[in-house]
Image 1: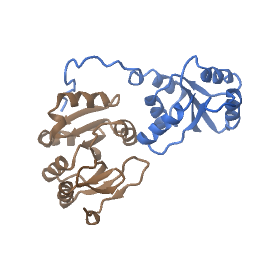
Image 2: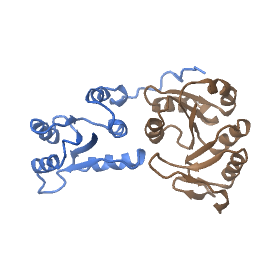
Image 3: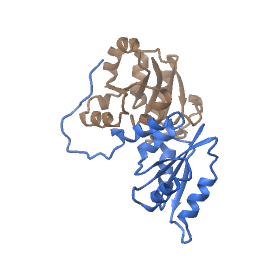
Image 4: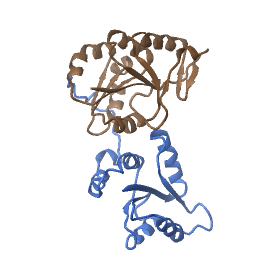
Length: 138
Length: 159
């Protein structure tokens, strides 16, 4: 089953992330939804139209949104009662790259695990402390 | 086994740490770069860029050459990364067993000719490339797994 990924964000964030992804990963399938960039934008309409366009029999959908508690995520969350898709919020570039590179083969539980990966958490870089912590294993 | 050998002036960065490592299924990255090997700060930075679950070594050319007997015995899928053509050519001269090297990204410098996409070579780098080719190693250029793998033709490079 093919996995589709939609990145839905406030403003042009999705388009910006898409440009970063194209530099790092290259050519890859990613749907984006930049919300509220036009005066007459309707989140309800845009999200429903997108979800109706998905062939859920043959495709698996992962919707990634920018902010937990934001309207974009709230709207897609409401849709989860009617459409069967995976919803992930507070996404960052690292997670998206991971999903796009491995998403086709990961089960739901694996994706859930990946979301918890320390590598993808927000990192506060402290002062330059101790030096080289490489394992000299060779 | 050594699955891919790359020259990338940015060493371990997004394309390398995520995209290429995943694509190759690499379990170990060996960085061979004289400058980085002697710079603790850079070593730390590279270590931070290392993907989860992947082993990392940073060696100078001399160190790397001395470790090759051990490296050959490893069961890891190895991704070797050089930072520049000189270190790579010096390495290949002493260890001419690498079948192909991918010029994944070499930055423009004064006097560089644009070869292809993100590969620029100046006269000294061209000489290094010729040294590499002389030892039977092929040179290709491929920035990302999804982009075309182009063969480098030294004769076509004009300054």
